[in-house]
Length: 140
Ligand code: UDP
Ligand code: MG
Image 1 (cartoon, rainbow, N blue to C red):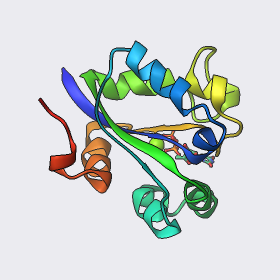
Image 2 (cartoon, rainbow, N blue to C red; image 1 turned 120 degrees about the vertical axis):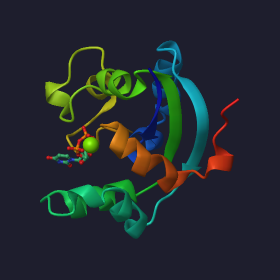
Image 3 (cartoon, helix red, strand yellow; image 1 turned 135 degrees about the horizontal axis):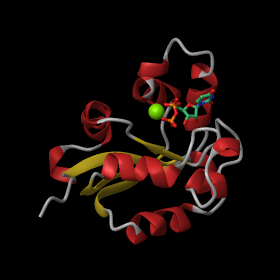
Image 4 (cartoon, rainbow, N blue to C red; image 1 turned 90 degrees about the vertical axis):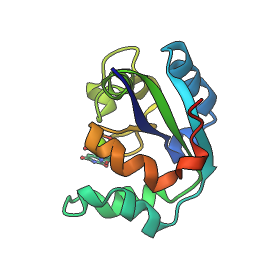
């Protein structure tokens, strides 16, 4: 089924100049880019995005990391794109990520792990409008 997901090339990957290589993998996978922007989140904006993790011990550090520099947020569309993107990304911890995955190739720690992808249709339904209005999503 054709669906949409919210993807972020995180500040570590943008700063290291590997965003293009990561986005090329999405294109190679056949995902369609419906919206994209570069933005530097405030701590509060990152905290709102990751509110689902607010009780987790890594929350504050994660929000500091996500607001340390610009990231690239995008909406991707494709057949089973939510699971497909998660597969391309690899496990949260790059040490556990399979060979050939984005995190295995570009992440430097469990926190600075290069990419974000929505983990379910419910998450995507919260995350896409967090960054994009309907008018910013190219759907034709
Ligand atoms: N994270 C972290 N320490 C952890 C687990 C997660 O710093 O022990 C960070 C990491 O950047 C991760 C993000 O918090 O991508 C969100 O965690 P989640 O469990 O949702 O992982 P993901 O869905 O990104 O694989
Ligand atoms: Mg997650």
